[in-house]
Amino acid sequence: MQELEKAKQGSGKIMEEIIKISDAYKNFNYSTISKLLEESIQQPILSEREKYLLNLVETGEKDFLQKQLDYFSNNEARYCPFCLQDISDDYKAGLVAKIQSILSDFVKEHCRKLSEFLLEEINFNFTPFIKLNSCMESSELLNKINSSIQENNRVIQKKINSPYTCIYDDIIDITFLLIELEKSLKNLDKERDEYNKNIVNTKSIIDRLVSI
Image 1: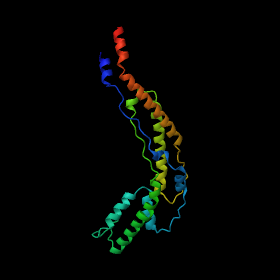
Image 2: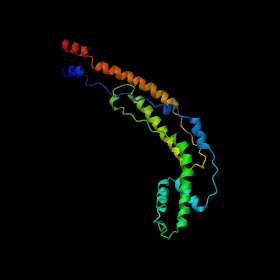
Image 3: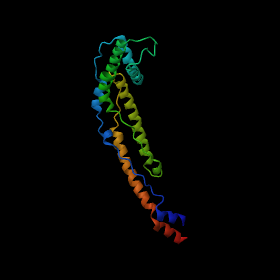
Image 4: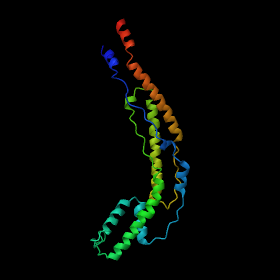
């Protein structure tokens, strides 16, 4: 009787919707990003100080460089917090100008194009669909796609951090995996509908109870 009551209420139905894959993943331009990664940008002649500042950016220390800029931009700053030596206003002005040049002219210009190709991983909870046949296949395909996105983002970030370096690392094409995932998700959606229909099918339960 409990089984019949559950069927009447439809309490076992899978209510979650199947994820829709954004066009941002389908329209990813592999040719353009490869050209950007391999692009050779002429490195300017830098002083030792500028080389040091540039190295901070390339090794992922842009936030540290920004803190330096904030400190030396302060009119009340009278000594260097790193070497503890007194600093003149002219020295501060020159250092601020160099840092601003590295942060704006260098980082922003090269990050803008490259960062457009950084993709977020596709998140979807397959737990409610665990009883359906296509659940495992869909989950495995999504994991492969996300692993590829992680690797592609790593390569792109490598170029962002070192824009003067030509990057020849491969960008993984996930087009085929996306096609396969959409097929699998479509099957999963059909299986969910069929599963939900069976959940509320009280006639077969009543017939079974009558035959007892």
